[in-house]
Length: 320
Image 1 (cartoon, rainbow, N blue to C red):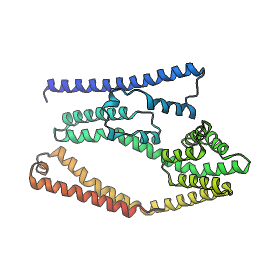
Image 2 (image 1 turned 90 degrees about the vertical axis):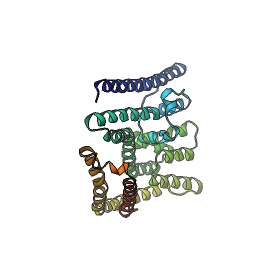
Image 3 (image 1 turned 135 degrees about the horizontal axis):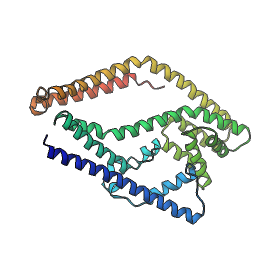
Image 4 (image 1 turned 180 degrees about the vertical axis):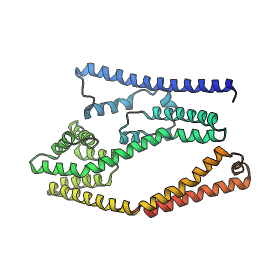
């Protein structure tokens, strides 16, 4: 590669990264300035980790002016809900900008270290890294919440038996249990303190946390508030069912481990061999995207791999 072209490419890459960081910092500084003005108006400084402060920041983010990167972010990549579920302190525009920067890095690395054919593949892989991190963080947080939910419902049931109200039981969970369930239940408690009905606050909780067991809890609370009954006993039974279901789910995962591993090998092996040949002998497989027959074979292979992956997923995905 010509050193002049390489220097220009590196310069553009550094400039793009600097612009992305500057745009993200500008948006962050605007949020801080608005928060400081509100603190002067109300005469106090709320805790950074409090639910009320979190609700205030969300309201400010909805009315805040968009920066340049916000305007350039496509509407199809609206990841606000996913970011909220992952509890990631990042804007969708900043995430998309980081993905563009990572794609530029992948293009440069692939072109310089391997060849021009590998560069687009490396760019596509690097582009998905920020989004993969976001969805991994979301999945980990939701799994942790699901594991804490039975204990949280049992804690609410004990609070109800002690004579406290349901809202007080939610506050006990927010105070006594770790994250993320403490933050979510604390937000429900703060919402109903701010005037939102408890049913609407719980409904908002199910939208933030897509968990089937949580929907059972919210539905049981709604029915009990309309028809009456012993809510503490209902919560104990729901917690017991959730614990037993997790035991069965663990057994199912152990029995289907071989199928999952076989699916990973069968799907990953062709991709690994393709990338290996693309690196070692790109001329050998160039016909796959230059010849008509090669294009048809490539499309057929991708379609068959997708069908195979879906079939394996349906076989090992046993609902409990």
